[in-house]
Length: 202
Image (cartoon, rainbow, N blue to C red; front, side, top):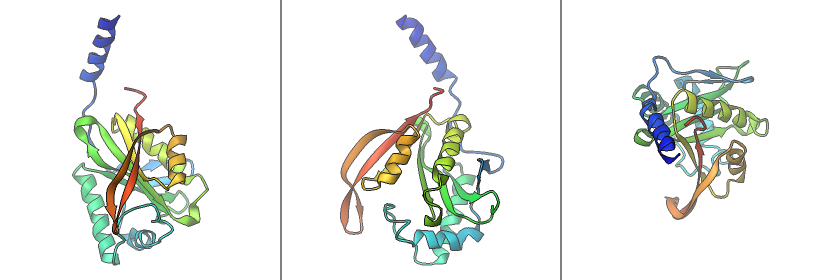
């Protein structure tokens, strides 16, 4: 039995598709209410407003942009990251208002050798508690596992962000680690909580 299981495992490894984020065209995704599309420079004002909104950024431990030009550069790096196959980030928009950005979701820190990527998301407060992140998260997880061929999707959250924690747990993520004071931001060392989700098809 051990030999058979090992043979099956080896067969699966040999047939594991190469991890890639290279697509002929940017992969636009849809859900019942949402369209997940590529970032555009026209999104800069909305993105700047979100990334300087302390309510939105409360648990996102990143420096705030100083001006709109910094955000435009950020968007250009999003697009270059996609073109280079390094990351994949979507604008979240409602289907009936596809040009109006209300949030973002994407894969970062792609570990190609180990078929891993970290997922992150943010949403304008006007759209909180409407199931939008849950809907977008489900679609991007499906895409990550079935189209990108990720083996593991990870998420790194601020330990005080219970809403994000509950969202991840709802979608099957398991707590993998708790790191004490592993991140330095604005004059203090912060804790991190890591969650992971394995591809059920592997």
